Length: 104
Image 1 (cartoon, rainbow, N blue to C red):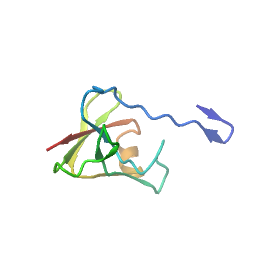
Image 2: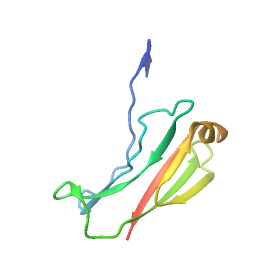
Image 3: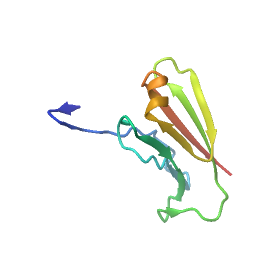
Image 4: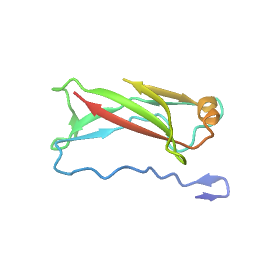
């Protein structure tokens, strides 16, 4: 929602099973929209739900899927980390969805 020169930024998260012993933070370096000259970097991390501390026991790996938020078409896949520049996002039409998966 835009008001004057400020914007309310809301993050959408998927509801997860609260009995799952872990939860995932996407580690996105940018909140809201990416501006010209910026790059959004995703460096996810898995946390132990019981302690709210990073999980250091398991060797987590990450997979990213970038899709067109309108058509659902897969635009890009990546592993470990993901960087998306303003120019890339604009080239995809500006409306994308990033899904992050964690596994070990």
